[in-house]
Amino acid sequence: MTATLEREAIFPRIDGMRKNLKKLGELAQLSIEDFRADDPYALAQHHLRLALEGVFHIGSHILSRLPGGRAVEYKEIAKKLGELGVVPRAFADRALIPMAGMRNILVHQYSDIDPGRLLTTIREHRTDIEEFLRYVKALMEHPERLGLSVE
Picture 1 (cartoon, rainbow, N blue to C red):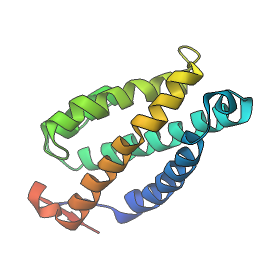
Picture 2: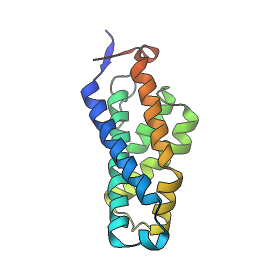
Picture 3: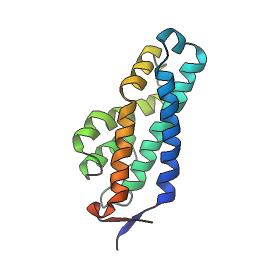
Protein backbone atom coordinates (compact mmCIF):
# COMPACT_ATOMS: atom_id res chain seq x y z
CA MET A 1 0.00 0.00 0.00
CA THR A 2 1.32 3.42 -0.97
CA ALA A 3 1.45 6.07 1.73
CA THR A 4 -0.39 9.27 0.88
CA LEU A 5 0.65 12.88 1.29
CA GLU A 6 -2.40 14.95 2.15
CA ARG A 7 -2.81 18.16 0.14
CA GLU A 8 -4.85 19.68 2.97
CA ALA A 9 -1.96 19.17 5.38
CA ILE A 10 0.56 20.80 3.06
CA PHE A 11 -0.90 23.40 0.70
CA PRO A 12 -2.63 25.67 3.27
CA ARG A 13 0.62 25.73 5.26
CA ILE A 14 2.59 26.66 2.13
CA ASP A 15 0.17 29.53 1.44
CA GLY A 16 0.71 30.85 4.95
CA MET A 17 4.47 30.48 4.63
CA ARG A 18 4.46 32.47 1.39
CA LYS A 19 2.66 35.30 3.21
CA ASN A 20 5.24 35.12 6.01
CA LEU A 21 8.09 35.22 3.47
CA LYS A 22 6.56 38.24 1.74
CA LYS A 23 6.37 40.13 5.03
CA LEU A 24 9.93 39.07 5.94
CA GLY A 25 11.07 40.38 2.55
CA GLU A 26 9.54 43.76 3.33
CA LEU A 27 11.14 43.86 6.78
CA ALA A 28 14.52 42.86 5.32
CA GLN A 29 14.57 46.13 3.38
CA LEU A 30 14.64 48.23 6.54
CA SER A 31 17.77 49.85 7.89
CA ILE A 32 19.09 48.33 11.11
CA GLU A 33 18.00 51.47 12.95
CA ASP A 34 14.40 51.17 11.73
CA PHE A 35 14.43 47.40 12.21
CA ARG A 36 15.45 47.72 15.88
CA ALA A 37 12.19 49.52 16.62
CA ASP A 38 9.81 47.30 18.56
CA ASP A 39 7.26 46.63 15.82
CA PRO A 40 9.55 45.55 12.94
CA TYR A 41 11.72 43.46 15.24
CA ALA A 42 8.71 41.73 16.81
CA LEU A 43 7.03 41.22 13.44
CA ALA A 44 10.18 39.65 12.03
CA GLN A 45 10.36 37.21 14.94
CA HIS A 46 6.69 36.34 14.51
CA HIS A 47 6.78 35.78 10.75
CA LEU A 48 10.07 33.87 10.86
CA ARG A 49 8.74 31.62 13.62
CA LEU A 50 5.58 30.88 11.63
CA ALA A 51 7.55 30.16 8.45
CA LEU A 52 9.90 27.82 10.32
CA GLU A 53 6.98 26.08 12.02
CA GLY A 54 5.63 25.52 8.53
CA VAL A 55 8.88 23.93 7.37
CA PHE A 56 8.85 21.45 10.22
CA HIS A 57 5.10 20.79 10.09
CA ILE A 58 5.37 19.89 6.40
CA GLY A 59 8.60 17.98 6.99
CA SER A 60 7.02 15.97 9.79
CA HIS A 61 3.97 15.17 7.64
CA ILE A 62 6.15 13.90 4.80
CA LEU A 63 8.39 11.88 7.11
CA SER A 64 5.39 10.26 8.79
CA ARG A 65 4.59 8.64 5.44
CA LEU A 66 8.08 7.20 4.92
CA PRO A 67 9.48 4.03 6.47
CA GLY A 68 11.85 5.02 9.26
CA GLY A 69 10.80 8.63 8.98
CA ARG A 70 9.27 9.27 12.37
CA ALA A 71 11.07 12.09 14.16
CA VAL A 72 10.18 14.18 17.17
CA GLU A 73 12.98 16.70 17.60
CA TYR A 74 13.19 19.45 15.00
CA LYS A 75 16.87 18.86 14.26
CA GLU A 76 16.06 15.17 13.82
CA ILE A 77 13.30 16.08 11.34
CA ALA A 78 15.80 18.20 9.42
CA LYS A 79 18.37 15.42 9.36
CA LYS A 80 15.91 12.72 8.29
CA LEU A 81 14.57 14.86 5.45
CA GLY A 82 18.08 14.73 4.01
CA GLU A 83 18.75 11.09 4.85
CA LEU A 84 15.53 9.87 3.25
CA GLY A 85 15.92 11.95 0.09
CA VAL A 86 13.10 14.42 0.60
CA VAL A 87 15.70 17.17 0.21
CA PRO A 88 19.38 16.87 -0.67
CA ARG A 89 21.44 15.88 2.35
CA ALA A 90 23.75 18.88 1.86
CA PHE A 91 20.73 21.22 1.99
CA ALA A 92 19.51 19.56 5.19
CA ASP A 93 22.93 20.00 6.79
CA ARG A 94 23.50 23.54 5.52
CA ALA A 95 20.03 25.00 5.95
CA LEU A 96 17.45 22.83 7.70
CA ILE A 97 19.45 21.92 10.80
CA PRO A 98 20.28 25.60 11.49
CA MET A 99 16.60 26.44 10.82
CA ALA A 100 15.65 23.98 13.57
CA GLY A 101 17.99 25.74 15.96
CA MET A 102 16.56 29.15 15.07
CA ARG A 103 13.02 27.83 15.45
CA ASN A 104 13.85 26.59 18.94
CA ILE A 105 15.33 29.96 19.89
CA LEU A 106 12.25 31.80 18.60
CA VAL A 107 9.72 29.47 20.21
CA HIS A 108 11.40 28.86 23.54
CA GLN A 109 13.11 32.24 23.83
CA TYR A 110 16.35 30.62 24.96
CA SER A 111 17.89 34.02 24.53
CA ASP A 112 16.91 37.37 23.18
CA ILE A 113 17.86 37.44 19.54
CA ASP A 114 20.11 40.32 18.66
CA PRO A 115 18.25 42.53 16.15
CA GLY A 116 21.31 42.59 13.89
CA ARG A 117 21.46 38.79 13.84
CA LEU A 118 17.75 38.54 13.13
CA LEU A 119 17.95 41.08 10.31
CA THR A 120 20.91 39.23 8.79
CA THR A 121 19.00 35.96 9.06
CA ILE A 122 15.95 37.25 7.22
CA ARG A 123 18.12 38.96 4.59
CA GLU A 124 20.47 36.05 3.91
CA HIS A 125 18.54 32.89 4.78
CA ARG A 126 14.95 33.61 3.81
CA THR A 127 15.79 31.98 0.48
CA ASP A 128 16.49 28.71 2.31
CA ILE A 129 12.80 28.50 3.20
CA GLU A 130 11.91 29.24 -0.43
CA GLU A 131 14.29 26.47 -1.52
CA PHE A 132 12.61 24.05 0.89
CA LEU A 133 9.26 24.93 -0.67
CA ARG A 134 10.67 24.13 -4.13
CA TYR A 135 11.69 20.66 -2.91
CA VAL A 136 8.21 20.12 -1.47
CA LYS A 137 6.62 21.24 -4.74
CA ALA A 138 8.81 18.81 -6.68
CA LEU A 139 7.82 16.00 -4.32
CA MET A 140 4.14 16.83 -4.64
CA GLU A 141 4.50 16.71 -8.44
CA HIS A 142 6.39 13.39 -8.36
CA PRO A 143 5.61 11.62 -5.07
CA GLU A 144 6.27 8.24 -6.66
CA ARG A 145 10.01 8.89 -6.48
CA LEU A 146 9.73 8.18 -2.73
CA GLY A 147 6.99 5.58 -3.10
CA LEU A 148 4.24 8.02 -2.12
CA SER A 149 1.05 9.36 -3.62
CA VAL A 150 -0.88 12.61 -3.16
CA GLU A 151 -4.50 12.88 -2.15
